[in-house]
Length: 331
Image 1: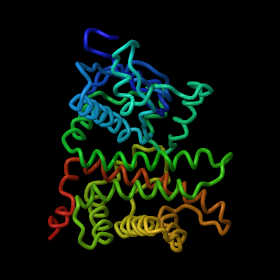
Image 2 (image 1 turned 180 degrees about the vertical axis):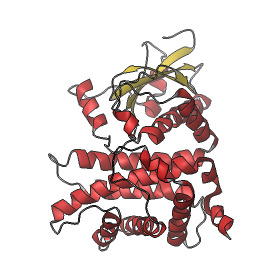
Image 3 (image 1 turned 135 degrees about the vertical axis):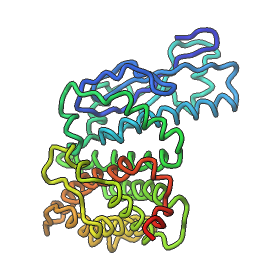
């Protein structure tokens, strides 16, 4: 609603979830104002007079605020969220939607795209490897838990930005897996997802420390995993195949993941399958000589790996800021 120079900015969010939770409360500057279990709307108020560079910077900050809120949901339910589009309530001459269209878009979807089709895009980003309470249709993440994570991400923006890359990478991988029965396996999306996930982990684990990157990446991640991820964490999943990995296994997985990222980044795919096979084997997913089955098994293994990677972030939390310094604690 437009009041003087105040305008309601509405965000449509791909919000896959298995529950009917309303989440009709404010977190940060945004309030969830409606939607269904796949597509949600969040709203905030902008004060604009007139639109200028300062206004655009404020809008960017407000978008980052919403992303921190969405990450608070993602770290709890493991279902990657994504801002789909923005629009303002009301129209008219001098309306901010005109001046800010290069930043926020026009808020228009393709004429043939229905809310149901957008919902399918959203659900394709979901995973069955989610904490068991989310299979209760009435479950709702406690507000105190969401606010705690939101505040953490607001305070530690580099960790938030790293997790956003991981979230988007897994959005790609889940979509590949969930659409595999009717679409071809897009190698470029698969490789792009690996790039995003490892880049996000790298920014969290290494904090711009560029010495002996692959070894230190694997060692820091494995140390955090061994030190903070407990067996109780896996008891929250209703899946007997999920359990804590041995230190050497998580180290080898992270090492292989980093090698795949490096090969893809440099345009070399010679060792991708060999390194991917290590990840698949370490996560106890069947190995098939058939290439199409191997691709499916690779996606399944990476689905499972999300549980372990988010476990590092979720269980380590405040200690994430230590980065490579965590290695000194064992000396």
